[in-house]
Length: 254
Image 1 (tube, rainbow, N blue to C red):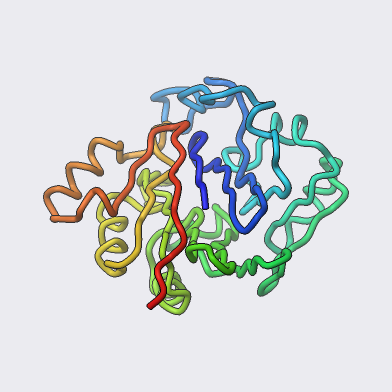
Image 2: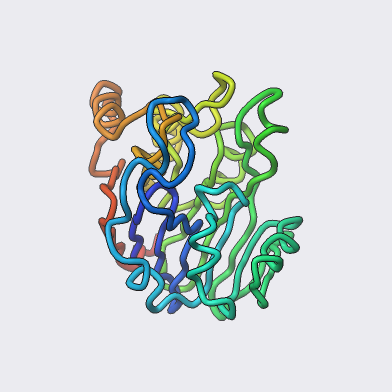
């Protein structure tokens, strides 16, 4: 397994003989409106050319239709014949963008030796959840690969914790920038990220979705500081910069 953070939630995952592009946001720096007045978005450039990001991709995963997870540039640049995996209800909008091979995950699907399962995610709490709309988490399982649980755009809440427990992940990917909408948390912040890391002491947690949007409230430096204060080992809590690839070996047999 190789996991490369491009920017924000955009990941390139090599897993079980396939290469996935997750939540592609290809827009240039400052090409979209500000959420808070602090900066136009995204606040940083992609770390490499779009053609290099797309190279070798077999399958695209779109967790939901917010622009920072599937933007207009991605819709234009991604080859229209690449398979797209999405949550139920988003198929028509993706097809309208010209894509021809779209699969919605109701419960799980098999891609060769890989099993992809959809899991609950909640994009905030209270009234803001309806404004944000439905999202999803996913797990990846394959022989000889670590089990990966990707939380998606979600706060830490009981159904997510229960689903992760049932999955037994070796690796957990969080969205940890503490973004807020209507002064309400809509993804995990430093406290929730560390709560999750402490709840799964055998897993490596990879914190992403950071320092790219102006409604974020938690920086990488702040998360490292909070982890140190809580005694969470930063060798197990990984906070990669944009462009970094993290590689995992074959999981040990228990």
